[in-house]
Length: 140
Image (cartoon, rainbow, N blue to C red; front, side):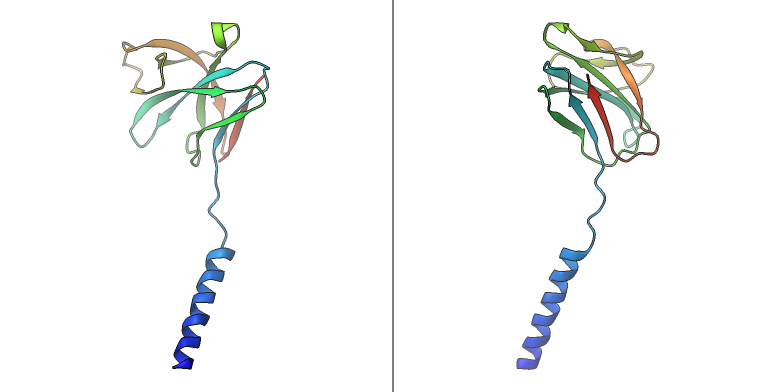
């Protein structure tokens, strides 16, 4: 009886040690940081390969000196698009890539042939993340 109990305890200790000592899967993400001194409202866009469509999402409120993580999964997209604005549009971060947005929290799927009939088209900055699995963009 003691022998089977000892083997069971030994097995349980080994299992716990394996769970604690094995490396965790790599975590990768997109972070948006704000060093502008003003509150930034940010939106992102990317080609969602799972859905086979372009996707835009927003809004993340980023306080001065803070960061937000809108995509908390491995970056599988080389290009991610970002837009930012402050209250009253006193400052904007724009590019030349158009995505559809609305004024409230949103996730919109569309493609190049899908007009933005549900909201406003804004011009996003293109970020080339290369082969990185983590990427940080800072609003300055």
